[in-house]
View (cartoon, one colour):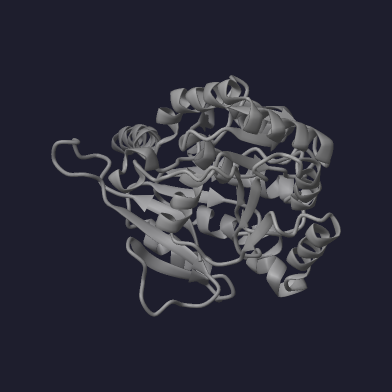
Length: 365
């Protein structure tokens, strides 16, 4: 299930009166009998009139927030989102998770029409904002940069005194599929196999549902085979379980370094990267746009894509140079507070209040 559209309510009330209510319109492939907390409507992608029905629910709130990603909504390139937005009568914020430098003509049309139809636009990085300005017909005055949020797991008592094993742990997590670059990380593990104790590489996450539908577990199986061929099957571990937040955060806390070996040159938003930095973990990442921006002050090391030798060199440095790892962690801790959900939530509330109040003034005038 993707919680892709939300609608904050009661932004016109003073903060001392009561907190704003939030209703989520969830995009689903099939209706869930029991609604998750906060979900007020289920939009089944294949349902006829689903877009119109979602708009009716969103219009009952004060402000609508559209989480846009081409693969979320139904229709070609997710075009169904436009039908919903055109039917909205409340101020709308569109959050652009993907901003391509070279979109197809149809993808460009969708993004520009969505931008034109909404009151405000949010990008999660300055890179994405500049891409919109440089490559799309979008009003720059509409764009705000609000980072992807993360939980502050360091403040939770159950995570404060977890023992850390002497064996170094390298962690990659997230939905698995071609383009994640795990093959290059496996090759890098063979290049640092002489470290003692031998680092352990944890690859955690299910195969992406869309990938699973089309190709099954072929990518994961190729990776497992590659680990055997490289002689590192005993140090590369795959965990395909769905992990709840508690278990995943426990794994993050136990990691000595988070590795993002992605192939992408386009990625302007990475929730995994945000979570890693928010947890104060040193990061080794390929130089995709979000990593270049967030790690520029020293919270991580950037490497070339598809370069096992560069990945191995960076991992070796983090695992054998305590002062470097300490500096990276300290920098992550310095920049983390602005990434925590309370700070991010305040920025969304301020923006929602601003556009709601402006809309109210226009209506009363």
